[in-house]
Length: 417
Ligand SMILES: C[S@@+](CC[C@H](N)C(=O)[O-])C[C@H]1O[C@@H](n2cnc3c(N)ncnc32)[C@H](O)[C@@H]1O
Figure (cartoon, protein in one colour):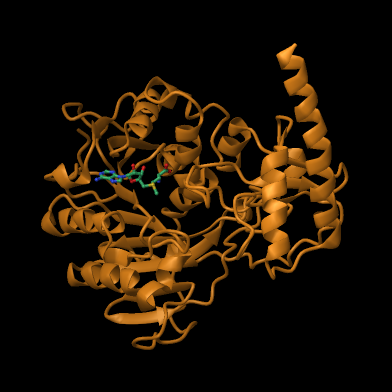
């Protein structure tokens, strides 16, 4: 197990018994709770962090983690962990089912999202081996649901145990990925000022892209109350859907008047993994559904890589910027709590603006046509709804459904011989 070098908060030993030597680059270590398929771990590995412990309850996720991080220790249930190893960073992208707008909305006391309490308890218990940083991640709806009780619960607990904290909503598009995925990332520390790395960089949100001939993503499984419309991007990849199965979003290619769905490999890439990253999940679950769920649940790798890189940021933070938080008001998109003071931050959800790759050119595989049935079902729901939509979109949906119907009937006839 990796241990922090006593007296030196900057370094960790690589091997327990090895004498420290200047020629060996110091390694950093991480424990990933709710590690999923390793969105945090891959991003942090790019900045030299080794995963010492990875914990996840999903056997398919564990199969991926074991294949990708063979030197880590593994655990299957946060509730069974009696301690965390002495590491530099603990990451916990905790379950969002109870905090998501489209989930159960049970909130922080729900059976899934409440599991973060076990991590906070472990971190409170062991002061000697405490990590330098804690990273939590979840959906932005947690800031509004039940008047933001989830965030209140978390930061109250952190403060009670001496942690300073900062959180910020970030959009994966800021890191060049054509996926509009906004997530809340919270960083806490007892030794360092979390505002410097997390809030100290801001590129500002660019103007939304005009559609033109750009591909647009949407959820074909929805259509009654919202469709997740995204110009030149896919909406957030999800672990579930309105039809209660994990499924890809659809993409409208206006130039080709075509409606398709991205391949699983491209979905992995849309989260910043290499294509095929979750292949090992097939060892425990046949078919692609489980892999879609794992990919939809993951943290975008370039976001976590950005954060890992920022942990060594130096400097000071202008505490005067931002306003005091009002008791009982919903939590803002970004805020911090240091030295007993809590304030909102005005940073945007684009900390950087990395080179953006347009959705149509990002995809490496040809999008599969959305089936006639799925297209017609979506169109029907859309027409019955009051949702605003472009006429050309509706026309192309109708055209695609008709053409696809012919293609599928021909295929069925051929199959019958
Ligand atoms: C939002 S996902 C985290 C995804 C991860 N950050 C990634 O990049 O893939 C939440 C994870 O919590 C896991 N989980 C749920 N209950 C758990 C438990 N009791 N112990 C450990 N992990 C659990 C789920 O299997 C799921 O993979």
